[in-house]
Amino acid sequence: MIVTTGCQSNAFTREGLLVPVTKQGQVILSMWQGSWLAAWTVGIIVWGGILWAIIFHRKRGDQLPRQVRYNLPIEILYTVLPFIMVGVLFFFTARNENYIGKNPSNPDVTVHVIGEQWHWQFIYPQYSTASGQAVTEDGSQWRPGLPSSQLPLLVIPTNETVQFNLTSIDVIHAFWIAPFEFKRDVIPGYANRFTVTPIRTGTFIGRCSELCGVYHSRMLFRVKIVTPAQFRVWIHAQQARQSSPGGAQ
Ligand SMILES: [Cu+2]
Image (cartoon, rainbow, N blue to C red; front, side, top):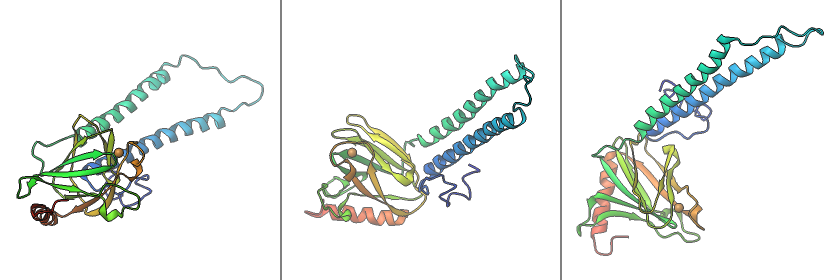
């Protein structure tokens, strides 16, 4: 976590990842940075050792150098070091996976995500319309030339736990919002889920990241992360709009 603070704004220190927009994304970013740091450290020690051997133990004259074998301390080092390295990577991976995989029993906002060829639907079961139906965000079915303003819209608030329940009605898709630094498969007949806490407002594009047919690459959606107050205003407007006759999409 030390690595994370202060150096998330620079594309170089993020090693190519986007600025994370969720708490979970921050953890993934610091894991990514830490892995690179570990890999560089090991790399530099190994390259240093190779260079040292090449330069200081190069052939001089016709005499064979002193032959060394059965060096117990060095062999113990060769065995113990990889165990330590694997142990450290394992520790951080397990700790972070536990955190990222946590699904609180009472999330502030629940969104049912339904994937189908080649389209997304977002249902907010905690908010219903006058007819008792849950607020549903459903853009136009993709067709050539569809303006992006008609893509399905996912709106979520900052600083609240947002749980996504993912299901598919046909083939396997994957729900991916790049600045979450995370994606999860959307599988027919199996409910996958994950929870995030957004920390930054903004507008992003979400994608399907599992090849699912001809128009897989067009299976996009819009994501808006807004403040909790803006979220409540928006969701109540959807409730009102979808309650009026012919108002639902
Ligand atoms: Cu798909």
